[in-house]
Amino acid sequence: MTTATATAMKTVLDFGADPTGKKDSSQAFIDAASSELATVIVPPGDYVIAKTVDLQYKNLSGSGRLRENQNNGKARLRPGSGLTGAMFIKQGPMVENLLIQGQKESDGKTAFDAQGYNSVFSNIHFTNIQYAIYVKEILVNFTIKDCVFIQVGYGLYCDDAKNSYSTTARFLRNEFNNCGNAFVFRRQINGSTFQDNIFEFISGDALVASHIYDCNFIGNWWEKRRDTGTAAHVPLIAPQDETDDETGHPAIRSSSYQQIMNCFAAGNKVTWGWRNVFSSMLNDSRMGGVSAHGGAVVVRTAAGRAMRVTPDNIVQQADKWCYLPTFAIEAGRNSAGAPQGITLRTKGGPLSLEDSEKNAFSGAISIAKGKGLFEQYSLTRNAAGKPTVGLTGVSEMMINGEKVKLTTGIPQHFLWRQDKLSRGLGCFTTNQVTTEGTIKLVTEYLLDNPLIQVTVEDRGIRFDGLKHLGSYVNSSKSRRQCTGFELYFVDAEGKPKTPTAFSMQMLTLNPSLLTS
Image (cartoon, rainbow, N blue to C red; front, side, top):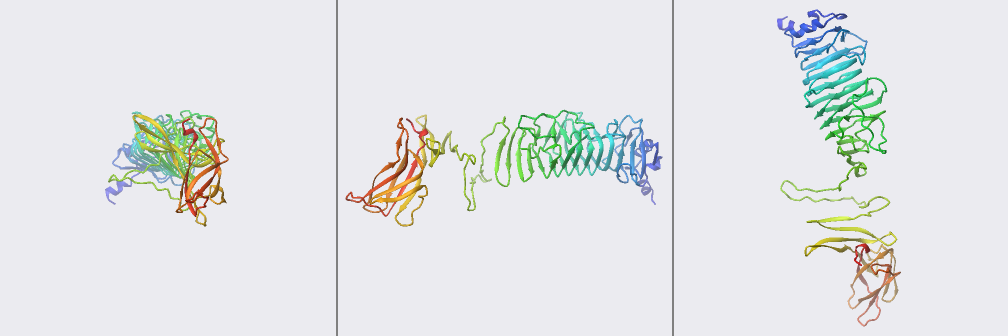
């Protein structure tokens, strides 16, 4: 065996550590860290650490983690009763395969006063200790993975003494059970990932920071709360109003108001005493960013607004105190500057425009024409508020420097024929030739201020006027209502003659848009 190989195989036993747990082994760990070893190796055994071990940036590696009180050939490290500082400081890039076991969740002990840069904690079982991992400054390229925390006050506490922010941290496949808090940041956490973690039976926070920006939450699990033990170190955010009937502690929380922004979440399960900030129908203080949850994709600001996309609809939402801007669907231009259009394709189904199921399209379609000009279209209703035929509206235009309103609309087109080729007559409940040259058309609606234009196809036959049926003109002379028309046709000699075919345009004008 070469000298290099023999050196590589040295463990803390070679420096006098006691694997029975009857004596303090801290000096042996200190001596191993002071040696030429790159990694302080901990073989199976039970080791007491009664004074702080400076690892001098060496790795710390055990023979595997194990369940509490089951020291089956694994490496267990316990803080001694006289320990006043952390068990370990200045760890190297890798700490792995250990059991760290204290006395109780609030025992005042700290396992690692850790370096926050370029560090990995892997496959470690922490139990019955107040601080598993304490970081004085910030986290950068920092990973905690495949670790178990049982009855721990704080899984990770980042004090951020420099008032900066932590970035590029990864928390993967960790389990917290019957703990106080999991991940606590006194200030900001940015650009980090929380994936496949379990938070169960916790009295405080799963994750809290003053600001949570640009983070990913994927496949995490929150289940059940406990009423006793170490609680959250900052107060809960109170419900916003009487509509905020969600109960439980937020699954993630910012200690500064409305500071969860630009995050992404998918596949998270939140239940039993936890508030689901990813799928909530309320938006204030929830997860700002993009959430995919329960078949819906939610794009949410941190200040009360959201867009929710489900298999059935796209819905813009806002809490009742929050400003809700106009909902815009916009097609842009390609890299060459060419405009791109918008296509609404129903694949054969109906296309509906409505305000709600009960109050269909009571507002207006507004067509912007630039320079503050626009044209509006709305469904006309009669004096009783009932719907009537046609889309009518108003154009606002500048004429000689003055803004004026012009009534406008979309006419209804009809083709009447004596044979079976008539088109567009569905709104007429009565359509008959009553006498030669007289055709009676009765609508399903009351018509307001109808304008009629008739074009006869037959040569030698002309339109000779009409009579409004069920006609009524109000006292201000601004509204005529009717239920239909009698149309009169004559030949070249002025005698009544029914045409073979004629086309008709009918436009109803909203009386509220007319000047008196």
